[in-house]
Image 1 (cartoon, rainbow, N blue to C red):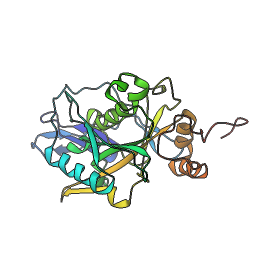
Image 2: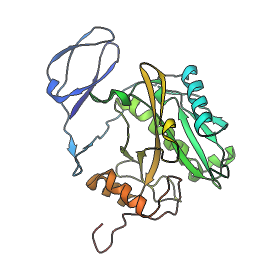
Image 3: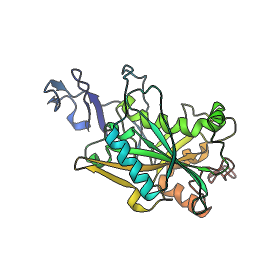
Image 4: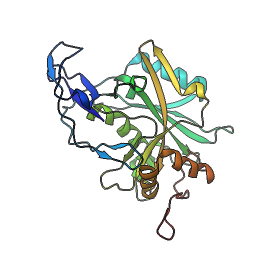
Length: 279
């Protein structure tokens, strides 16, 4: 288990093992003396992980602009490995990070839209000790070729929710001084609600972007910053519960068994629907 806290003087975030609780420390950024707080109560999962329940945000609104160097590098990376960027959905006003969403059009070889963020990696996430390789991430999602994608279509939440989800997940680690990485799941509220009236999906899980070659999965910006790319896979409530109990590997086995693609299908099979009271 780990303890997340921040320097009260400069706001620098830290995540340390719980055996450091009560010990004195010095902020690496500003040098202020600190005392590591006691660990919070943590809910353990049957699969061995932890459930993190975020309290109300304490940080003030902080206007952010994009990191031009990272945006350029990510754009070049997308066009080298995924395809030509057709359009970028820009934020008008950004809090903490400036999240852009880059769109790659469907082709004969890739008959689906590919949406990829930039901006989540403008700040490091608060990762546990030993996970420093996952401080920086960006997210992507695949939509079918007939998904309504005109600006006017996004006035309907049933069309816009995938983009809203990308932005929310990108900002979440920075709002709550936490991290997101492979196999992490984030429900749509507690209790979780469907993302729109047209879908039963209530949770998002991060996965390896299996539609892309491995060279795309990571982008080295410099010696201190490497960006990981993760695909967002929406889940039904039963699939979420199954993953929490049995683990992500077991859930992916069911996806593979039923040929479930990472391209969003609002009518796809629920691979964990209960039968006769069991999974």
